[in-house]
Image (cartoon, rainbow, N blue to C red; front, side, top):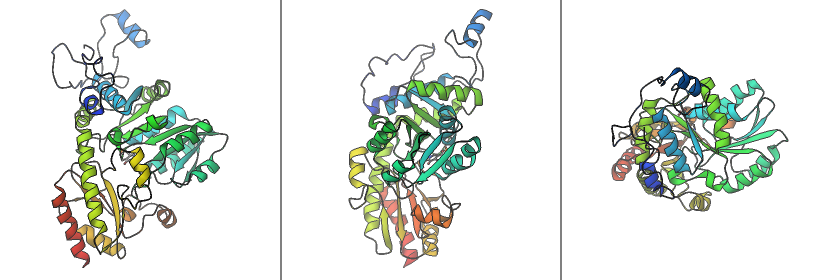
Length: 400
Ligand SMILES: *Cc1c(COP(=O)(O)O)cnc(C)c1O
């Protein structure tokens, strides 16, 4: 392998350039596209070399649970995009969150977590970390006083997602970073919805970014993966956990994500442009009660999103006049959008949060998350926006 021939030229390059070129290391074949190293293990030059690599005294790969050149290329690219010292690829987004917690928390620590995070993240904290003596308090994303009040002497981590799912609430990352710093704890941000194309939490003071690469980093719904991004001293701990416990990213998936990242900014702009157009249009429909999208000037998070994000993202939600039945009738009438809970795909998706993604919450928790029975979430894909609007019109027609 040779080092990236472009490394020096990439210093200070724009996100678009880094997304295409960061992390490239060519083999002696001189291939132009990134190679996939589908190998579980590596051979050594000599017994002495094997001993040195095993001991960590010589560079070079040993085993793909530890390092793999394709995964490393993905890690270098995502680190460059997030403006981080280092990134670590993981088997899934949940593995990224688990690895962060296992590496940086210990029994007796306390976590304050936004109530408005991915449902499985809630379960990870409340079911599994709790079992190992890590306590967690859940607070509403935007209630900074509640965060402050929940912090204890043993609080080690604040965890949040912004914008939130499904109501697109926007947390003030600079203010949350200041709160974390003042209390000597880490701020961990799940940046899945914006991706570094739209928002870079580390630049606003967050300590660690986690990703589900499954969503927009892939962008075409092919592979499951994740990443943890941050300072080298934290990533060292995450790497040690991954090497020991094994939720590493596969080389094949890393290759798919590398190719996905090349078009990340173009895709995020297109998702955002169409979502904004559809949000504005939905707002004018008489069968629609309310639209939740931070790109709408009447959304409470609009001004903050304008300051903190480069665009508003592809996910929006809205309530229809009526109850669950009207929401279901709407969803069953659309023909182009896929009825699936996934997001971050070229294909638009539509889902009824109250009976799917948020179905396991108690009715009270669902109510406090703002997930009413008449709420519908769409993740706007890359189809022509006019066709998507016509599809939503089918949903509206079902309510007439
Ligand atoms: C999907 C998702 C995750 C989990 O990622 P997986 O790759 O499915 O494990 C975490 N956070 C958010 C915001 C997600 O949308």
